[in-house]
Length: 412
Image: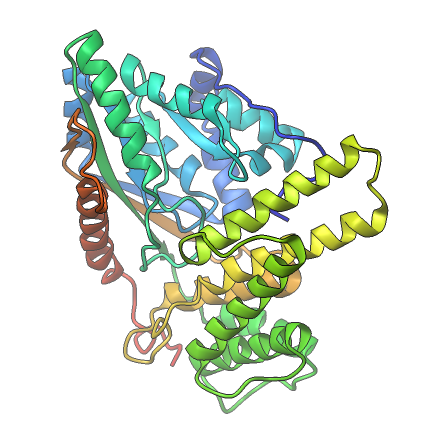
């Protein structure tokens, strides 16, 4: 569950010392963690000379990567190690509530919390001050959340440009320095043959549905069939029956249905822009109602369970957004796309994903985008975000070609 209902939000500031991040990097604890928890066993950095040049100029540096896996923040510890320069990073509040070790490690590596369910002025001010001071680069994921769809970029959050422009104005006034933004593309590639892993994981999911192990369908076909079956189960759960139409139209209809039900039950208007805006509005209201009830001494278990169902519904809507159209078409599918889809289904159906496929991450840093001190034009999307989206998209399209297509990998 991505919304924390056990305790109210409390800002966690970043650790600014060097001893802990140096210790973690020296003993390569990042490598150990990524291998054990995420299956990432290797990395390759490209274009680090762009990042290094900005460091030498003393710029305030905003690193803006795509965000397809929970491994992303720690994976950026590798280029930081090569450049011998620590970083700060914005992390969602719920990540500080997954366990004491994770919370400790995130903060000591320079992470600080962000309340996604409300206005977080403390986090905003810290992010701006990091860019103004220019002691360390700041990692800020413009997509906001992970999507486990490496080759497709989700819509970017305009708040990234607001932070960058505000910092640029303050830095120009305080020291005459500049702030730059480096687009960074993260691409995970499968290491070795994935057929046995895919067959084993698909068989487990098929067994849970009561299906006999398929001998006539390819790995790609089995993955697609399971995705449709799991969508059907969610339709029955939330609508009562399997819906007609194409998979994309059924997905969109289910998203609308679960959001509509929660919005009506919670009394949330539909003024928010897009699915992600509606999800955020629902989560914000859930947190507000939950802690208001506790404050008034009116927090029965039934109320908590009802709000938890709304959290699950918002999570489902966000998860369904991560199944893009045509991602698994035979002429476009790759081994990494199939692995991503299987892991996403495992997370939705089993609550966890198997990390038995060894992965290598390519970390490509692009040329800096100079952040202007002027405010963004009114009535239109910030041009900075258009440039960032264009740069990230170009890099990801290029990197996606490095994955093996499904036919060559023996999966179709």
